[in-house]
Length: 354
Image 1 (cartoon, one colour):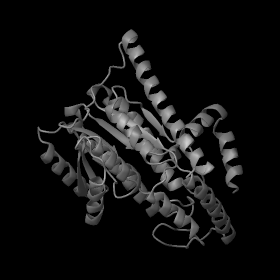
Image 2: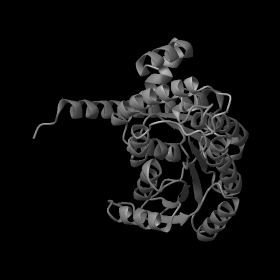
Image 3: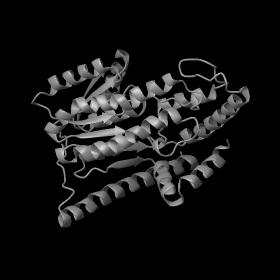
């Protein structure tokens, strides 16, 4: 049975993206080798490569569904001992079931742990559990900060609670986890991999809550990379574009079912002096964003692209500082560099129609 043209086009774009990824990995590697040979820096690090008998440990947060689930399964199948945080016991059972269906050639392990990464007591418990399991037998070589809370609302409509909860999960949890696991990562010359988003530098209306927390992660990753450079710990930022997962399907459904903003709720707080005409304008804008995201998510990249980038970040002698995941992320990064933000924003507003 022949493939529909749209399917064929998607497959061509996928392989084009993978080709660009591998070219960028090779270019980064040989460029670093050149500078190391002639100028003495940067020095290569020694990655921990899993085998059928050697299973270094990593922690992946936010693996209940979507991108985090794919990352955890990919790393386990590649031979890592993967500690994976989930929010509920039934989610840990589902994660284990999915691994049993995968081809686990390297005999990696998956250990789900029920935890709320924004809860400091849970973070301490996570650390103690992983430390006890690893001890001197298994090196702890990677922290993948993936857990995230996504709230799409106009900034004036969003409540302070929306901003605070978003930053608790997307930023402060990353700070807590990284600080508590850094001593173990220094012991193994391991890596911190923060999963950000291109929304940190290329966002649309209604993304203020989410994008601002990811912008904070982008800045912190850069600073931490510089601070830890001489201590044997690499800090890497992975910034995906649109990724097609069950989670993005939920976001699509939320946009489709939208009717109007409530005056007051957990995440909504419209000031009393804001006129109804202003709120209506926000609602029209929000619907336009919903239609745009609907098209965007339908053509989104598969989560395997992000997992592949994280594998390279863990296993490369010279991991890249930033990985742009997906063709959309790469094109937007190039457009911002060539055209400048103002022109790109004008094009974006014209495409979205708000």
